[in-house]
Length: 274
Length: 308
Image 1 (tube, rainbow over the protein chains, first blue to last red):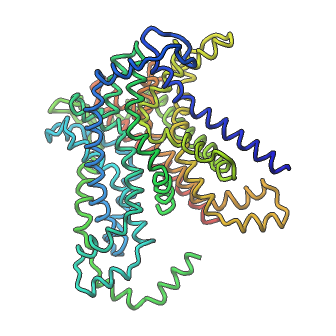
Image 2: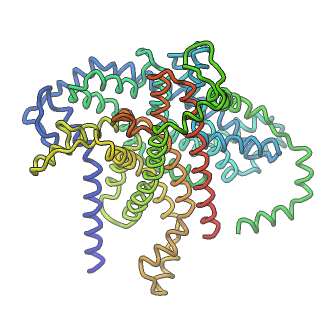
Image 3: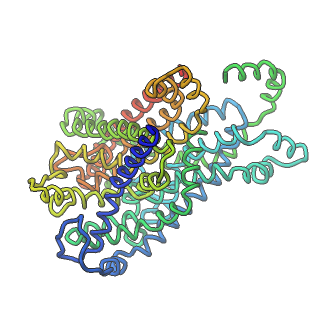
């Protein structure tokens, strides 16, 4: 009896917390449905129904171009992180030489140093290289920023999960190191690759700090930078901003809702192994 | 335990180990591309930043003058530096405490067998995948002075509206709150994974011994969660100390410099005030602060883990 009451109370608490956390999304929706000049309370839904804001925002915010830029940059960085990161992690996990120990410490140290300290000189260097306002530089900088974490996750996984015997057997059969890595080890890294994709790609997709430094021309703007300038241009028409923000959130939200299981598992296993 | 097996292994494989050390190759060419990338885009610019912090470079000229420690004396006598450092620490440490306490509370709640667990977890985690900049704008709809959801509610109940974002003694706390709301889901998931890895046997034994729920939490749950606590604290501190997007969206660092963090201050020094040398000096300070605090946190919580 007492247990049952406690269970009801806990469920009520969960409902309450869920409602509190849903407030920002509710406000975003009510705002996006109200036309310009409607200053009714943000808590109230309008007594009319129109998707006018969404239509105007889609026309004027260039979200399709931004979506393409974000996809290309995140995808490019992900490919670099997966290939270079797993390749780098392999000897660091398997060969215990002095050099390798030193290199692993170097990567951990870089993880603690914030990339933001490097931003001012990096900006100068990027201008010098002629890479300003290119997707290439956004890909490279984001890949570099998340490389230490990626290597850390991969090397932890290789050390704790991949049996060494497999590689030894392949070696006896005359397989080269490259062959061992790409044919035997790499296919077994799928679970940790999922962690890397989920942790790093969400942050790269949402990156604002690098993008605002290096992607200043509007044809390379990502979703976040596009939203930033759209907000500045339409500060007196927040209904438009809310509609654009809602649409900008959709791709990642759909991905999350469908792959939620992998998101949760990727984050927990990444954290536990790391 | 771990030490014992490790020692055992070392003892039994001593000969083959020596043999492999001489034969073992570093395979350094496999991590060469990764090192090149990180060196070019992080390590080299970092040291270049150290050099720039001793100059009066304006951020775009070809030339700059070596000014010795001038930027450093300027930094330590600049009152804004202390506002910025105070805010940066508040964002870092404040968010870390809130995210861990609330995240652990949520994890405990969702670890019990209640209905709607999945829905609650989804709603709490959803903000993690949304851009902090967009999240900042959504919260602008709530905290804005005119027609913000907060003031709509306050005036509905007959009170005077509050200028939450324009008040320098309040808005840094709002930024902490928004950052916590956004990332508490990560802490929750990591704690949930930690809780689920604790064997039920411990609690059953404690029940037989008549331990109260609070005693069980203190003596079983917390010590066994120590690795999760370490990861969460370090992740949240580093994230909070680097806070940028939310501040830009909510207050732009203002009014004046009242809610500026190191990141936003550096950004405004570089782009709005053409003061790149000084921006680099501020960058050195924040790197130093982050390094010290994350090492301290790592050391403190790792020690707890070993004790547990």
